[in-house]
Length: 177
Image 1 (cartoon, rainbow, N blue to C red):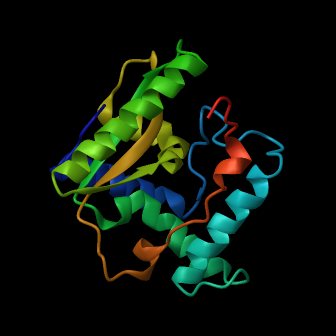
Image 2: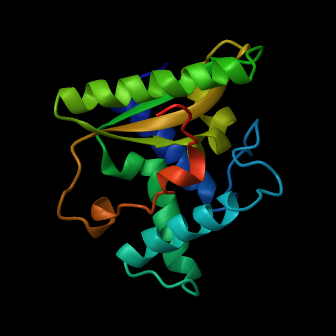
């Protein structure tokens, strides 16, 4: 994990902001953030989550400029004072990617224990080369995600969004209970 702050973090954010003017999708991720041809019910759930998020901030589907403006906030860590970059060794497979997810969850729970809020952001994977140009990770590491760390603005409508969840019967089967 890389934890830039001060001038180093400011330089990363400034470069991404400038480069987004010409290449809003960045360097392109090194891995598929979502599987190609995401099947149902996952595609519909992902779509609804996005629609619900934009609805909380009053951005209509047709408002492309509003959607882009909100998307760009990812690359400001949504105003959080700390941005973390989580890397994973390129040789690791799905079991280790699951470990990385568990590590992130533990990090996020620990932050809450200390009164902080987090937002994991795989969107940062789209800027892996740009971030690497500032942090110089070894070649064997791949940027998995960023994590915004700070205090949530509880008055912001977007922070009150609670996405729909599948019911227990949709994903769990009980035997012997």
